[in-house]
Image (cartoon, one colour):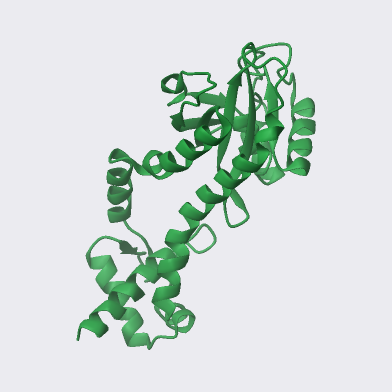
Length: 263
């Protein structure tokens, strides 16, 4: 009985984790075929998830979409630490290894928003000022490390007809110049900036991905005056390791549960 109950839980979790941008709803028959279930078992699982609010039935089509219970749990997760807690240990290791302030940022419209930051011993020692900060797509390594790896059409939809504020002489002035920066960043695999957003700092950033899609960025930041001759690229290996660790931390939650449910 315990084994059967555990298998039911694993199957239910696998169903929830199978939803994505390209798979926003399931019908009973296609779900049964995808997971190797009988139609009656698929119907019971979907109905049970809908009863608890994790799924909802679309009127007329009788197909199942994600429900409000997931939104409630996502809000609770974020209020109790969420992405900041997930990224914290990786940023601590990155800040210790590089000596620079390490930040983790997620997309927020035409910006990225820093949700976690940790001071490095070589500064700048002000991570509390980074947390919650918004960086525009056109200025700085933390934002370019995300936007450069988006699909070009998706990116242009976000940036077309937007004014580009000049923060310094190093800030890209228009979309043509910015797209050239994006192309170079995508070719290199990392973003490097100096004084584009804050004239006092330089930064090195990389994308954090789920599969092939960028979902965030991780970057290290230093004070130019304290390190006038520094080459941040010396720290690229530890930054790359942090980006991989963060990508794995986000993706492993899906892969483990999904594989268990299909076993």
